[in-house]
Amino acid sequence: MPDIEYTLEGSTAVLRLNRPEKMNAITYEMLGAIEDAIRQAGTDDRVRALVLTGTGRAFSAGTDLQQLSSQPPTAGRAESYGRAYAESRPAPWTFASIGKPTIAAVNGVAVGVGVEFTSQCDFRIAAESARFGWVFVHRGLVPDTAAGTWLLARIVGLQNAAYLLYSGEIISATRALDIGYVHEVVPDAELMERALAFAHTVSRGSPLATAETKRLLYRGLTRDPMDHLADSTETIGRLFASEDFKEGVRAFLEHRDPQWKGR
Image (tube, rainbow, N blue to C red; front, top):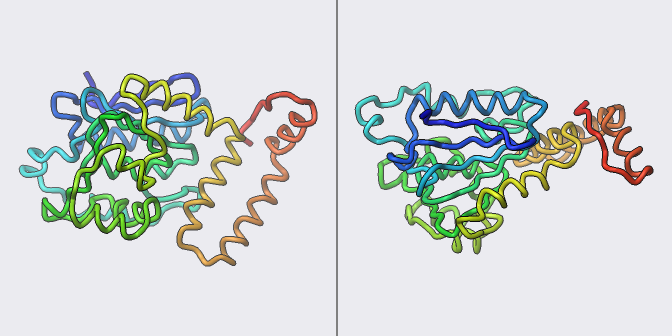
């Protein structure tokens, strides 16, 4: 069976880490397959949202340390997360890079690069059995995609992020909910049903408007407010001329669901 499974559930792409015998530990080959799947989801007009989850009792135990010890990563892999990225991409991280909502459906323990992947997603829904840990300091490392040192503080606040990163403590789903890291916690048996329903909820709007909103959201994390306002003003001007805007207005006036074109 492939270590990465990519399927469509209606208009939602499901990317499943599928190496349960190794607690879905991530290999270099899997990283390449994940990148390919994200690019596929990003360019497929049928896909309105993406759900990331794992097979078995773990979401992901992080990087495969056996492979890492025998094949240390090159500098290029670490640097790839900091490379320049196109203006059309919301952010440089894999799961934040596409203009579609991404949801981590966390079915068990998520540590190392596995928990970094959850940070890169727009939303996190946790099973009751989920656990989260940024254990990098205990391996002599910093968070390997830089999501932990960039996005995490923006999700849970600086003090909570500092504690999680410095201590490496593995926290429960309930604790993750308390600090605002996860959107909700559900029984294990209901995780995928809830994640798919949630994906539908956050992807019902215009695909074009959603993509532009996500781009502005992530770009706005560091930008000067006046620069952000100028970008937002230019963007809404373009959207006024779009087919989706015209359809959205017509659908509202005609009391029906819109039929989006994504353009």
